[in-house]
Amino acid sequence: MSHPWRGWCLLRPGLMLYGGTVGRNEPHAHHAVQLIVAAEPFTMAGAHGERLTTRAAVVPPGARHAVVAGARQALLVHLDPRSSPGRALLARLGTPAEPFAWPPPAARPAGPAQRPAAAHPGQVPAGPGEARPLVFRPPSAGHARFAEAAAALRAVEDWTGHHTAAGLPPHPAVEAAIEVIPTLLERGPVRLRAVADAVHLSPSRLAHLFSAHVGIPLRPYVRWSRMQRAIGLVAEGRTLTAAAHSAGFTDGPHFTRVFRDTFGTTPSELSAAIDWVP
Image 1 (cartoon, rainbow, N blue to C red):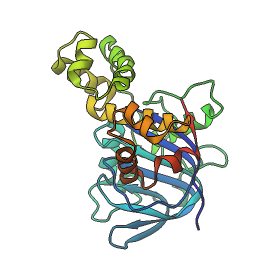
Image 2: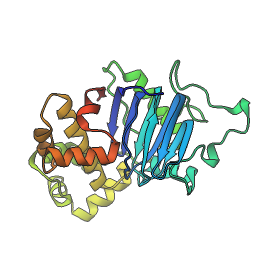
Image 3: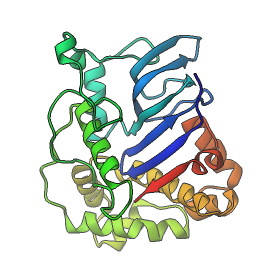
């Protein structure tokens, strides 16, 4: 079974959430822990020919894998393994010897009565648990995909077992850092000291606050932001070279290589099939 990629995507610090049709992709690996949940079976392949046909799978960080048979209704989630939801999913997964595994021991249904219910009508199954407050910043309420994306975020939190926010009120310096990073990205590589200077803190103090309040260190946050900026520019019609330079990559081929190695497809192929949710 093979389908073309077609759907929507939401990017947040430590999170890339795709909803829609999952198609085939090339063997690849990424630093993220990946969760795929679908309304119908799909097939994953590992680096040494291992295969798994399932409706849900977890791929640990660094495991080389590919989708060889896709699904029409699915959620595909990349979580930074150092983020709170990423750590929670890895804790539930344990340390599998295989390149992918499902279900994690803590989420294994005991019987038919405990099978997960649907996240929302016609969509993928949600994990065990009840609706809780969102950990990630919700999508824009004015976007056509708002309700779908918000429900998908809650489904992700159920599957990861991560149901509580950090418990810390937003820190003004962290909020200011998040606001200034896009401007710094336009000028080139983003350094911790430059961000710290912009918000009038020492680099060590900002690094501590950023990890505590955002859930991941500043460097992976910037990496996600660079990828988000570059892909957004490609989606707007900019050339790969222009988008890559604007996001801090060396050139178009560098950006394409990093993207393909991370997601198993090229940025131009994927951006043409995606509705980006703010």
